Image (cartoon, rainbow, N blue to C red):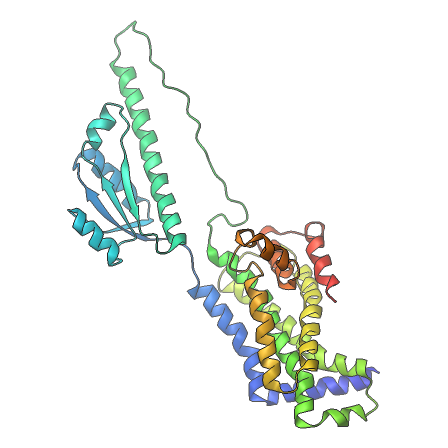
Length: 367
């Protein structure tokens, strides 16, 4: 049995490396996805462009400005002097936000009155707008706390001997600590998920072209009259692409670790084992598409019809919790969803079998 399987394996490897279309599918998709999601797709906001409109022009307002520039997250690119300048700055996209210090800012803070700092944010990109707004609110809150503490110290020093001490109300401060991705780099979130998409695209398309290519060029009848059994034919057609898929897993993992510095906190052997379970699903789907297709063009179109919804509903780029309830239930039928959870759990959380066994069971149940 295995002798006949090895003969088919050798034939498939020779044919895959000889045909230009197959060579493209073997090497181009992994490289393109790595470049796109490693370098181009970046949702981080490291340097936000802001405009500073100081209508108070006092040492206190300049001190707040120094807080923004000293944080390393903001670059002040302009100083509008009127409402028309603010409108023009946001319309042209010259700045992502405008920070406006209202008149009386220093007077109100010195008297302990409530004052406001207006932050106008360009909401065209909702992700960038939320990050810029959060960064600005954090800096303003820290400045407010420092001003309150300084005023309390001044009151304590200025009180007359024997007078009662006016103590401020207790404050509760929140100190956040981010686990698994402390710097909140979007690259750490996207690059591990590339493994699931590369395996799906490469193995699904290559396997979908396997059987239908024999039917299209007229060699399927020749295979049927040989001593090769159907199970041996399927093994010979799928095992080469399973090897390619595992090699892609190793390639992406090495590049993610060495080039993009993505941490791998879990077991690499567990990642390979889960990749084998996932390969059973993608190879089976590819065989199904290859069987029901009559031409290679039909197989390619069918593979795109399968992979695109699977990618969109996998939670790779769009959180599943944000989808409609009906669509969330539909994602339970998507094997890509479970493998992406496995990959991110192994890479970022260092999760083991005791945590990932439900996802592993769902992946195994598909075949």
